[in-house]
Image (cartoon, rainbow, N blue to C red; front, side, top):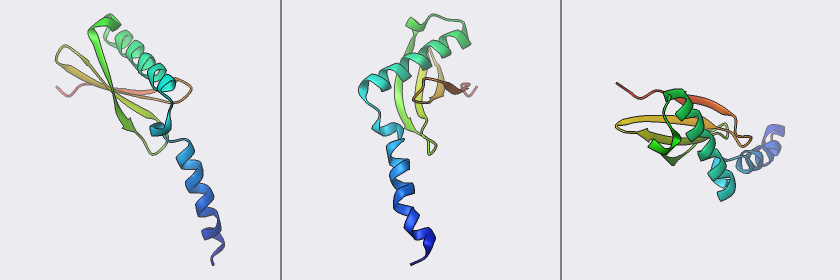
Length: 92
């Protein structure tokens, strides 16, 4: 057996534990709120006009949310510490 093969199960277990798909409902709600607030600030509109939905996660453990205000769609990437990593602009 190759030495690197011995570490594969450990690496896979570490990735699984940080997956955004394993987040608790409370964390997911907090992440959604963080993305909603950041997007509202970004577009200079109240959070109440934004709808937010979980869209999945990245390979690096970030949660991705899709946000919509009127006809515009944004995406937001946020980590478990509620740090916003990206807000993507809608395609025009």
